Image (spheres, rainbow, N blue to C red):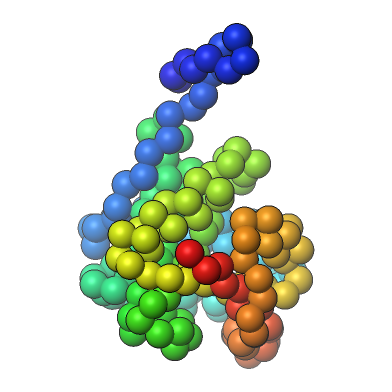
Length: 184
């Protein structure tokens, strides 16, 4: 823990770090992906649909390919050296929608349950903005499930606004993601 002075008092803060993933990190990424995705979306989907999706979406070769893609970057956010979640960003042809060369996509921000409500989502969006600015991007965008009210509110609070929607398939169940954008 580090200490910092706040209004004359001392506040204990946990040390956060951001670590870029390499291809050999795929197994830990797979584990965290399944844990966080299941926590967020498991209550809203049947076990069969969830299992089919998780098996396909986080399959070893698929994750390794994503990690090797030069237009995608993955970062673990660590709190006191423990993986608390991760960020995946895309540019160019790695984006899940054609948004142009001036855009950076935040494809995934997943936080493990014990680390929620600790400001890590805000921290990761801030890091995505820093990366976008360093790459001279003028827009940050993402997709969020239409029924994920806490996430929609969170992104709106950070300056994102809805610009459209697209279909997202969980097995053969078509769902809708809202596309949200923030101008930088």
